[in-house]
Length: 430
Image (cartoon, rainbow, N blue to C red; front, side):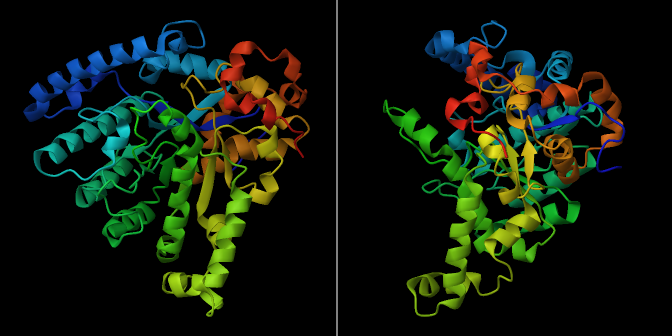
């Protein structure tokens, strides 16, 4: 397995951020018989919820090609997905969940809560159904889909077994780590209860993935301002997982464990790492300061600064990599950033990925571009670039095409749905 494709005049694109899930009824073959009656009731309730959401969303639910859906069957229609991503220049993807797995509550943030007894069994059966559907879905495009397996934090022992099952059954995208937000009743991610999860992920070389939207508290969705507060804070709640794992010593105890933060922005990294390094230094060495009194015991056994753990074990799934973000690539670490398209979300770059790549990368060294759009993600998740190179030779954007600067004034109005095209992020890449 080579680290870079050879003799390719086109870019090989692997998105580190895409989403998939089955239509509710498609999960039925993967549901244990004991849960079939409950499953059919859940399907009926899910359809009613979907209809209500369509009524609430109204015209905002119109997709990029004008059909009345947000993501629709792009989530599970393998042929459509391949056709659209190939037309966009993308030949492989890391696949996070999207549609709601069987028995998951609404809102999804309620999924990050302690459950016991039969309810825990039901929800676990639903997550296993999704993982098994996903394994079959990924197998329809061998080597091109790195599925991310779901686990449940209240079910640590079973989660460890599921991680082993995922590795054995081709889900090489690693593990989707849920959050444990304040007020959820779950032990925080720095609690010792989760030690077996970190251990098995290091053993099996399964990356741990955390995604924007996870770990958020209850914003009080009945209040009209709640969605605005969610948008303002959603990435921060994902960022905090980084320092929870650093300062609790998870990265120290498991030095080969790899952690990816996806769709949480990129430009925040240098400032946050500087701040974490300052806290670390004061906690560890300034014995007369309050930071040492409060944090000294936590960092006593840490041998590296937070920025050093980041450089060794952390990765950013960059949906979306704008010119402003690209200009920081060396400050963040060019080997830490993985480009993403967020397909098939309405805010994703499809079908304007080529335009966004031109906007972001015009003037950037082609070797660096290839590293950002495929090399780093392939190294983390284990994509075979030699296997993918013939597909890139057919579908990938040419190096000459991406080198041509894009006139922002000619941006199609429909492309503005993607945050990568936001005017305030359009600075000249270095």
